Amino acid sequence: MIRRVLRSLVRCQAGSAAIEAAFALPVLFITVFGTIEFGRLALVQSSINYAVAETARCAVIRPDVCGTSDQAAAYAADRIRVAQVPAAAFTLTSEVCGKKVSAQVQHQLILYRLFDDPTLTAEFCRE
Picture 1 (cartoon, rainbow, N blue to C red):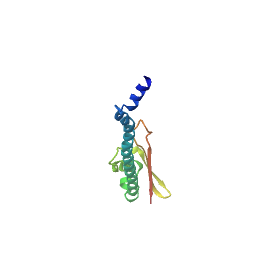
Picture 2: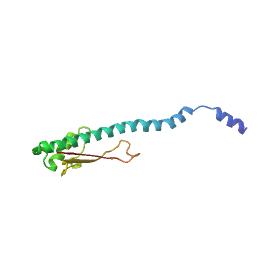
Picture 3: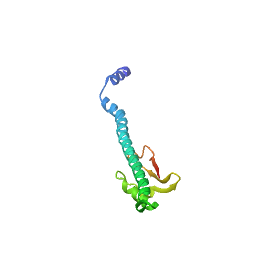
Picture 4: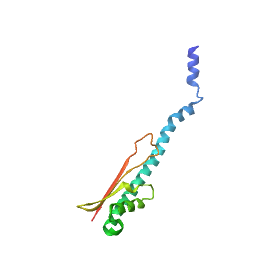
């Protein structure tokens, strides 16, 4: 009797698609959103690099526009279009290499419960 019930359970395929989906969908979900998140992260990092380089260039070429630290921070924050980065994330210092602009930004992930938010950094020095 028990063998017959066990055999019928082994042969029964009702609900197998639901079980397969329960295993496959979380992996697919994390893969798709991970790819999107990696693309967003690369885009924001590239934008920060661009803003820092342009601000260092502006600090050397046009000190009337980007000469002080506050002016440079506002200029850099204005150069980033893909994310809202506060001006406080940017610093301007005078170094041996010339005017150095640095940025440190905490990037918020879509999948914030699965991973910690990364800190994006960039720096550029120009004479």
